[in-house]
Length: 60
Image (tube, rainbow, N blue to C red; front, side, top):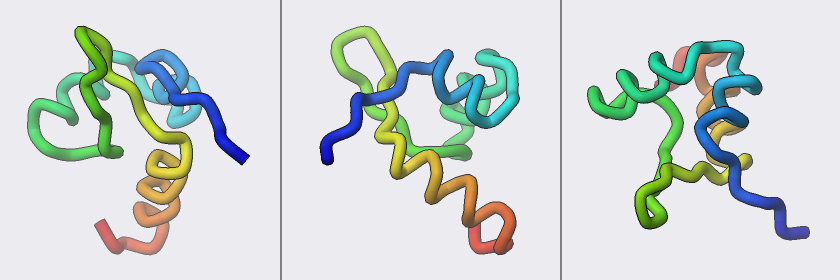
């Protein structure tokens, strides 16, 4: 099943962190992988969830 891409607000809500934190992480090469689509940053929900799960495991 194809899931819609998440915007920065969606990821912010999912992770419980401010939008500004996500932008800082992105500029430092940290956090879930996002992709520029035009002037927007979009995230694959599976990538965000995988990144989140890896944090608990201490992998990333």
